[in-house]
Image 1 (tube, protein in one colour):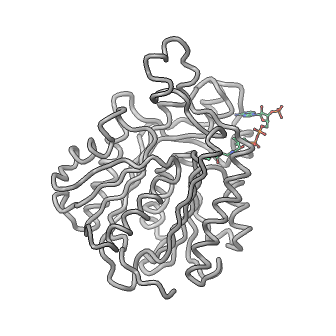
Image 2 (image 1 turned 45 degrees about the vertical axis):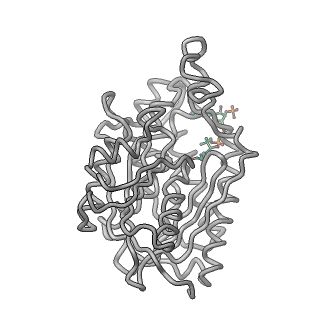
Length: 329
Ligand code: UT7
């Protein structure tokens, strides 16, 4: 671990909507069963946002918790990076809405569109900004209301996703704790396997009245599954090798929470024992960019992560994008 550690996480937070949608309730909506969803994905229930709330509402709750723990006033933030593919509006960014909600009047704010990898992309960019001496206090968030773009008649996708937000404050390191290694990558050739065709400049919202079908998530599940295992594994190996560690050195592995079978396959590949793998998708489903920061905060608050622990994270999402970040808490 020779690389200088420049940025550390000084606070984390998360928020999920109160409303819970169980597998049994879904089985009343589409042709599925609790048994199928549990055995194929590991998901038992997920949280669904209130109709009158936007992504930035949950992001703001997560941000406030993270700022409080970091003992940082919102006015002290220099930069806000918000990973999301379900912003409040086409524009301005959800990060600007969040900035307004928490009163971070001195920050620059922008969204990162990297789907499920959005939070780890954010951490990586924030670390670079701190290393460059450009900013000191950065809020990184992953927040998503995928329920808004879910086709509730498509059993192949509607059982998978949930809503939520997670946040972390990144500040200059004390030299001991912080980000040891990070890796981000994408491959736009594979965009067709996971996307939402409508809503952008190619198929603008005005076209939704003609045909609403493209305004929902489309996914080739099996192909996405295959690539997720390979590419999340590849990114995790990359950061572990660069840091000169193996799976056995880790205290906890927090993978993107998309499917329990994906998580188990990666953990096996990386030689990480089950007890060192954090899983909470049973409660939240796949919350895209929010899944890792929700799990991170939850694991800290329930004692699975202790100060000084070595944590590996890895994500994979539409684009494709994939990423891994290794840090000492
Ligand atoms: O976060 C971004 C990344 N996203 C992911 O990582 C998701 C990756 N993919 C997956 O997690 C899995 O591919 C799924 C959970 C989406 C699907 O699991 P699978 O084991 O790959 O199932 P499948 O798509 O091969 O479908 C198997 C069968 C099919 O029926 P037949 O053709 O064998 O008769 C489907 O029609 O299961 C059927 N099926 C369902 N049955 C009951 C598909 N969805 C459902 C459902 N309930 N909800």
